[in-house]
Picture 1: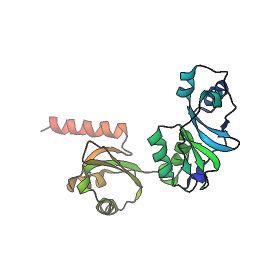
Picture 2 (picture 1 turned 135 degrees about the vertical axis):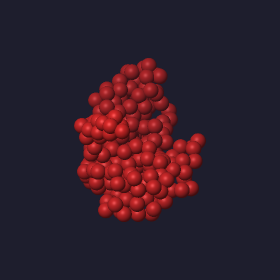
Picture 3 (picture 1 turned 120 degrees about the horizontal axis):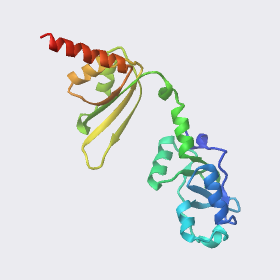
Picture 4 (picture 1 turned 90 degrees about the horizontal axis):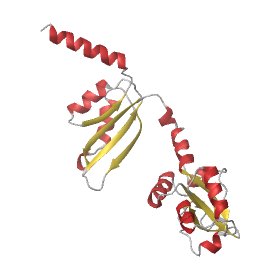
Length: 220
């Protein structure tokens, strides 16, 4: 999915002649803490709620209060992963989207992106989730997929999380089965660490298992 396809029509840009008060009112209305600013139709930067509050001059226009604004943006041809990376890098609640000539196309917000991601097929599809932890040197998606598919299941989606202060990675798998016990046991046989799993097992089933185990213990 490209950035141009992520644009939301719900959030308009400010102009350099808008007041700080108007900017804050729009941020409150659209539930964001940043807004793009245009001058004569050209993108000049992004204004933040904290920058405005620092000025404490709500009746003045943005061009009077700010001579320069930061200019984070994504290109319309960027992939959604690149858009998310830019948002994270600059700690934004929204990001402007420009074309190759830096013409303003629109913007997309964190809320809009999360809604789009949540509505993708792999997220909404019924299934279970397994979170694995391993050394990065041991990571092999080919082997992980082989283990899952050897149990007549498929990986619907996956993502990897890592930390700069650790050599381990965390791999989250969305699997098209809601009973994961067999798959988990297979991972354990291959010495994978199961950090978490989310499956069908209900509270009542779990309580029944614990009750049966207790009865077996008492009858020994």
